[in-house]
Image (cartoon, rainbow, N blue to C red; front, side):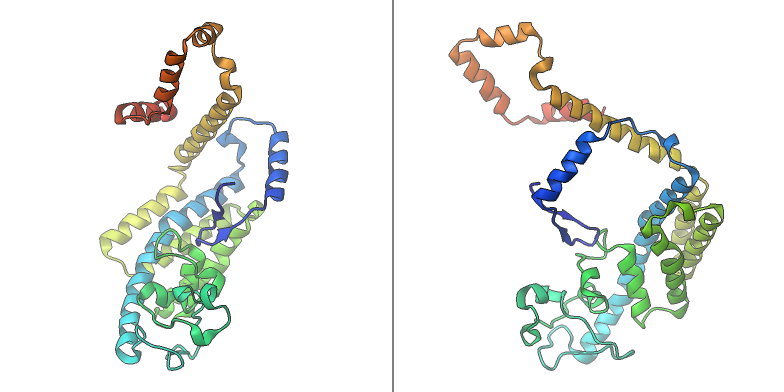
Length: 303
């Protein structure tokens, strides 16, 4: 592989060449077949829909809420503790409200740069994103911002670990994490019956309503949740996956065929070309696609 894959938190995940070879061998033995939404049973569909809601509906709402609370918190710490310019050993070591020790390992790449030599750490906390990382375990704090790299696990952890969040929101976050997000992440399809499915959406709706968003924003999010709950969109989304999987399989087969698909006439014509003609063809093949041809190629691939 050319580069390491990343987890949702931005942590590099390396696959050794030996392991990759085993994966390739296993994959080669598996027969290819077209994706079919009907292959998913009801429990799997419920698990899939809940996961989509957690990651595409709930997480964006939580990111916005966490950002607003921690921005105010960061400004307070600048005012009272100069946290944006602090240096060792006079840095803020504990949360002023809870007394919990703050974790400076991820901030400013301290652990990567200085290992366990905490006297060398850069303790400046420049923004709300850096501030948030002080309240999480090191392996959970490798996100780049309050964006897609900051997943639901980190967001719920921040709400539970930081005293600035409303107790009602904390209670909701605890329920969502223990009864919804963690069971979903463990991917046990058998547990996702109709009752758990219904309870999951009740938890998500309660959390959204307790965030005290604007009336319009809350309405839009609740409507989106209910669309998924009623399976209005699931067939459409699964259909997209089916198209993508089939297109990948088709392209894979075409690549394997290579030149075998070229008809004999084309081969003969190419063979009979003189040297200057051959060079011209090769150079033309290497020339970058102009805008028109590039758009045509994209249309050919994606329809």
